[in-house]
Length: 627
Image 1 (cartoon, one colour):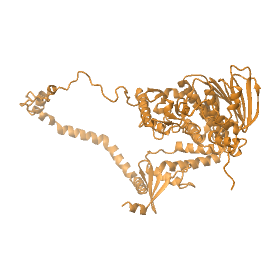
Image 2: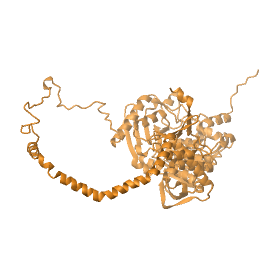
Image 3: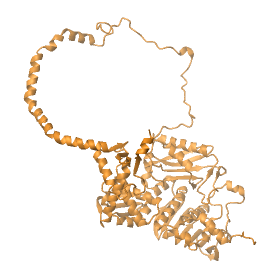
Image 4: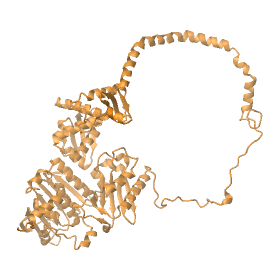
């Protein structure tokens, strides 16, 4: 039998590596911007076309490369960051594996222009699907420009799985956001389809956060600054009122490298315990400065997962430092790290045995509480009580005359109205009896449990209905009929609603504004991350429009469905969620009956629009088993 194990060709091996490193256009942005930062760039420009599918160009003013380095950077595992294995545990740069450029060149057409300050002329290099095409001298600015064209053109299966332009732009901006926050001293400019969508000047961290997240976050930022022998923690956390129901404003950076760390995230949320509503997540921008020997960044190809040597100790430091920062604003009791949990005892407090004495109480043995002339009488009490005792008979003088006068006055003035009230009660007694009968029958049929469930008996046992989900189902069905039966259902705002958004939310709203317009939203762009709403769907009347848009954005960030159908569906669900009765609301019997009756008119009464269970039946056998 012949040998069957063979070495893979370089182009195939590079495509396999690209599957780990380059998942979508956003991955290319991440790798190229990190290379620019490692090259010492202070100004980075990013040009994108068709959400990165057609073109991604990154221009930096870094140190540039020589002719040999320009050619070598596309070789697999070629790197300037490592000389030996020990260097893996002393990393101060973003990239180090030498896989990114080789992986990108394996799945796209790449053009590189680079020049150093000492070079008279630069270098131009062209590679297509790992195949070297040309290398020639070229005139260019100091730094490096890399153009990645037609991503995944030679891997159609990978290109087919790319999402819509709106979804890919979301991922692109997310990667740019992570790099921009970590390096506020670098200027960024981003263009998409020849439109400037983001421009960030050099600034400090707080200004960079505000520029990306919107001005509204500025008033909620709380600085955090803790230095220990194990780790230094800096950055900002946000006040509890700035928390949201979604992820998106939670950032960890270790040695200026973005990372995801669920364990440390639980430490942060634990510090906000009892300060946040249910399902809300605090926003934070936390930077760790730690010895590179104490972390391992080489456990994942994208380098976003990092292993710490002393995770448990760091967990406690994070939580304590956040509570201290919250305590500065009287949000939680502050922690004094200098006292180390001990109380300062004043120096004048002693504990000598002879200084401890039993308490003494003075007693008057001659006190008589019934003798008002004794020394123990209440202040001013004796003279007043003596007068009352001596003149008690005068209290009953003319009592009978006063009683008769009072009765005559009541008879003349109140008799008519009193009689009228009695007659009215008699007239209404019949209708009240009927109402009491219907209420009594409803009481036998419906019962609300803890402001959350409606219980009603059925033939097979006891049916329990989630009141919020039931109302959500009926409202969604109602809104669906309204939208399907009307082509124009907008409500014009008497006063246009102006909303300032973060950079990513702003771009997402603009990218889906056409679809939102079909549903009745009229959204105008005011620039500088600000939009104005001139009209909205009539079904939204009485609901906070900002909440509706936030719900749509939050759902869109977590899903990548067909845009038009998705936006329409999510809008209707968001409308129904906003208008549905909340948990904890006490319902009267008629409200419970109305919810149950409308629920069973629905074609799908047992599930909400997002497939959550509404009804559960506890059978008689199940009830019997409980006893």
